[in-house]
Image 1 (cartoon, helix red, strand yellow):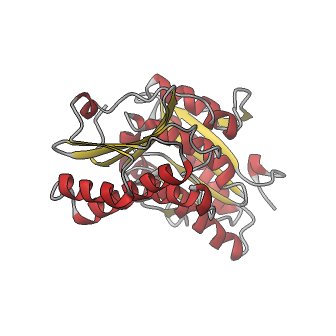
Image 2 (cartoon, one colour; image 1 turned 135 degrees about the vertical axis):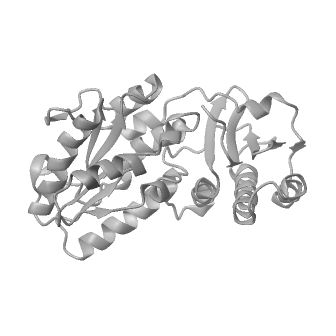
Length: 319
């Protein structure tokens, strides 16, 4: 039987906690965690080093709350989705009737890569809905840009106020509506220069070879190999599922490598493409899922010329 505000709720109870002081954070999070422990529910903290340390210090001695490595879990949106889905499935298989998690995306996510974290916040309303999860997503209003606050305000079906009220969110947008919005995607500053490579109608092998030639030595081997795979998958998807011409462009900077793959089609019809695991290889879903796990930033946009995916490996641009 579920407890707290999620009692009687089926599936995922997804709350946003927007706080303006450390005291507000603790005043809301501590009762949430202690209530989970008292109810015998698996209870987790996946906060950053500073905020996680605050919570750890404030908890009474001996309280059995598990601290997850927030920086590892929130390395990429798809890493978080894969990790949490596995954890939730294991806990329910062990008999959990409700799981509680308080987490936060890393501070760097609130900058130029926020677009794919906004899509994450929308997509998890479906991604975690098979399990009895009650989570709080903590956001510090002292460091939140306006666009982040606006997206948080529409991607969470529930909110928890600093004085402890748990309320339905009247501004909530269903994930499909949010994910289908045409959102502006600012270019990476590196794209102001001429591409190092520009090909029309390349094979996946040609694209891989160009990446190998242009980017070798820039990144750690594992990260670079992942990027090569991502480029190959994206070009293959464009050739199989897009409309010609398929165009491949590549830029190299001092700390990152950026590629775009464009075609004249409308892009995937599935709003969750890339964010949720898919067995639909024939529709390009599996390739996009792999791509989102293999890069440090993936974004996409549609314009009058068609659909473009932009892939970044290395350090994304600073805010």
